[in-house]
Length: 130
Image (tube, rainbow, N blue to C red; front, side):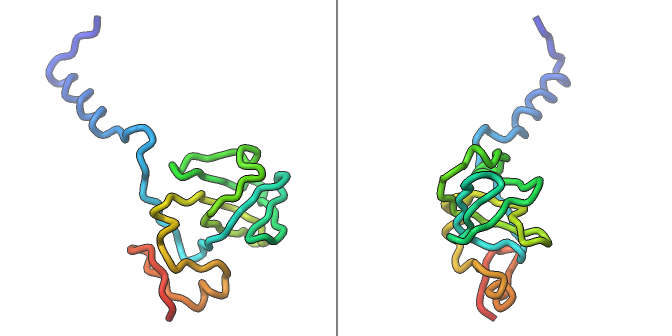
C-alpha cells in the first residue's frame, strides 16, 4: 500500500490535473512556408501531391490530426488533406493531416506563388490577399 502525506498527495493531484487527456486536440501553428494540398502516399517514398508526382524526403514526418507521427506505410493510398512543407530539393519534408477546424481556415495557399502573393498572420493563422 502506498501512503502519501499531504505534500505528496498535492504533487500527484497537480500532475494529474496538468496531464492532457488522451486524444485531446492540440492547437497547431503553421508558418508562412506551409502549403495546403492533397497527399496520397503511393509507394513510399513515392507520392502524389495535388495529383502530381512527388517524393517524401528522407526523414519525412507525417503527423495525424492528434499530432502523432505516422509511418508513411500507414497511410498508403489514402487521400489526405494536409498542410505540408518542402525541403530544399522540393521533396515533402513535413505533412500534417488536417483537423476539421484546420481545414475550415480559408483561404490557404496551395502553391508557393500564392504564399508569396498573400499575407500571413501567424498569430491568427489566417491568410489574406495583399
